Every structure is written in structure tokens, then in C-alpha cells.
Image (cartoon, rainbow, N blue to C red):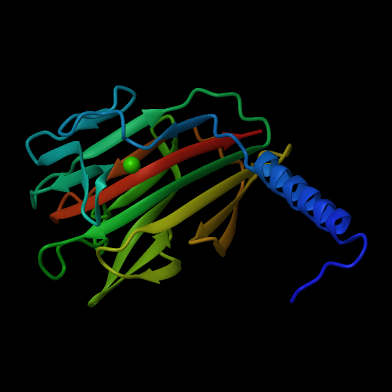
Length: 228
Ligand SMILES: [Ca+2]
């Protein structure tokens, strides 16, 4: 039979208190996003009010059920045309002093081989981080044969991925006083790539965009912005 020695209960209580204290610290460390969109409060078939959509008869942008989880809602960019693209933009006129962090989940899908890629100019599918109308950098799906990678806008591969699988991406912009920007790309929690941009303007809007020469479906969820 297990018997506690003298002082055992006190020790157990102390351990319990310590555990609770640790849990509290962890809770505290979870940062609160300045802006977040999980699409759960938007009716199916609609788009959150803070997104500006351009579809132009080339497809649609709307909130749909997550293809891998019917209890979750996500944003779908459904490009059904070989001659045009669909896009959704949201702006965040926020005062970023030093760091901007953007988190999101993305799932690339397609119905046929080579249904989307970025082989030609303006034939990419991904997320552009912009200052006004100027693209600074982005994250895209990069098709190579039967595989798909997530790449930055200069096509440096960040990570191989599977079609139809959710990937978690985080991009951190750190602005220096001299006007340059360091950009760190994380995929599924791993720092995949770091690049420096000189004299980059600060990102103030994000555009999700599909290829204008291919068809594709891109799902996005859990967009979160952090600044300091
Ligand atoms: Ca969601």
C-alpha cells in the first residue's frame, strides 16, 4: 500500500500550487492579436465586411465549410477561369512601430494537374503583403510537378506541402530605424526563411489573390495580426 510520509500532503500542495502558477504564466504569455478573423460569425456564402472582394465573373470569394472539418468556417477563393483572377483585400491602418506579425492557415487545392502555378508573370496564387498598391513580399503556392511548396515571392521554397492539407504560416516584419525591413517566414512553427529588404515601406494591407491564367481553390482561415 502507498503511504505518504510525514509532510507528504504539504509537498503535494506545494507541487499543485507550482503547477497552477506555471499554467497561469503560460496563459499570460499568449499574446492577444490586434485583429483576428476566423470567419465563424459570417454566414456561409458571404464575406466579412472588412474584406474587399474582386471576382469579376472569374469565380467567387465566400465563406464556406472547411473541406476537412464541417464544423469550421473558412474563406474560399474559388477561381474558375483561365483568363482572370479573384482576390480579397483587407486593410489595417494601424500604427506599427517596430514589428508586424501576420499569422494564417492556408490550404491549396486543385481539380486537375497544373491547375495553378506561378510559371508566368502574374500567374501566381497566394497572399501579398502590400503598402498601398505596392507589393512588398508575399507567400505563394509554388507547384513543382506533382508536389506543392509554400514559397516566398522570389520563389525561394519555404516548405513542401501536400495538396488539401492545412499549413500554418507566420510572417514577421521587423522594421529598423534606417528604413530596412527584416522578414521572417515560419511554416508550421519552423523558421523557414529570413530575408532583408532595404527601404521597404510598412505593410498596411494584405491581398489574397489567385492566378489569372489558371483555375484553383485556396482556403484561408485564422488570420491574426500582432503589432508592437
Ligand atoms: Ca474558421
